[in-house]
Image 1 (cartoon, helix red, strand yellow):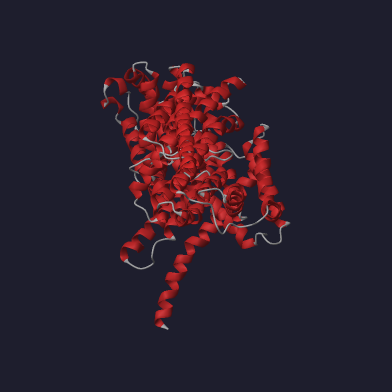
Image 2 (cartoon, one colour):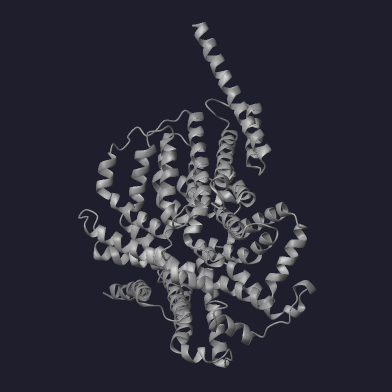
Length: 636
């Protein structure tokens, strides 16, 4: 009896964070859905409610993973509860006192400064729990820069800010933590993540995998092609590389290993396929919504710009796995599921209708928030008509909670990025950095692009894509625009390389996750991912020099770089694998490689020479194959 009684409180205490998470998630989702239809509150109120709820969800989520016993665990639990309380008190203060804050004309008292300090510390703690120390450290460095600007070198110096004005400005205005990036999450991203969560709950991931089985399962190397196609379809709604690996990799990686792919290669294929999730429309993750807001363009413009580079990305991966299968003599699935397309569509094809509606409404310039909510309503209505797959009340609650808990880390990340935005704007750092970058690049666009690529990849190793994008779009994209790069191409360039950091050593989260599933060495899987995704690292240079690939300009401006990129991908894939309708020797491999690089170059003459080199390599191979076949026939 004594032991049972002792265990009950700990079990009860472990259940408390889960119950609180459910209540906060449901209440927050209900509030934002209501305000989406009936009108939003002022920006400070909307964003404060979202950030307060997001921080609470982060702390409560961590509480659910802490064992109940041990002094250290109890101390950490107490700290997390206290942090959650601080989140409610500080951001609740804005909601309750919004009118007084709006009428204060920027003059804040000691109470506001103290609450601002508590909120900033609590926010940095939440971000550290979600993403590790990198982003909080960057934010602290920017805060120190704002405070001690007089001590900086001349080109970076400024008059310096007092902590009271810096803290209150970040806390009580829309030029800091509660700035535009968080506003984009509150106005758009939240609804897309809710839609994605419900789509996953209805079985979208299984449907996409089964659909990819029907399409490519019987081809040579079928499981790897299922990973490419399935991850591309799943990624088009998830917008998260690591989540995509976890969702589809547990199914595709063992299949690839069974038919003969090495664990390292299987993990790399899944990591690269899943990393394309943030590049594949229509969802693409939170960063693109912020991009649309920064560029003041419709979300449909971003979707069109991303579409063809994403298609080339997956074409490259498809060719890589096909050539590797040919090189190893691998076949498709022997026990292939013989489901007819009609049966598949009858069973769960209704999941494609909301996606089609979402894509269509966005392309017709409807509000992204309205498109996501209407698509979600259609999904739930269609689901209620499906007796086999109808979501129970508990499943719907879980989907709602999962959606809001996926919003939480995005919200805290962009809120901390808002600190950086606020410091850059108030200190004039953006103009200073633009001058420095221009001087370093010496007006050489190529050098600036290389520096930007390295910066994006390095920052992306420690930051979520959305935070990495915001920082670099604020600091480096203006320099690229000054040197003649179209704004959309400049922002896409930064975004692309921030995304590819998920597969770039030494910190490659998507590759590491896939390696864990595959039972392969993490670094080996990362380097293999880097090798097979090489064309993706060259793609951004194409659309900077030939922005027609981003659907900027007339049809000819799109077709020429698209054709060149496709030719280059064929050559680079053959050079990487060392196989094209047969083994490729060193000489032909060099022809494929140099031909691909020349085809990637933004010049019509080099494009033509590259295509000729690739054609020459293919022709030599075909000549050798026919001569070998003729020789064999003569011998017989």
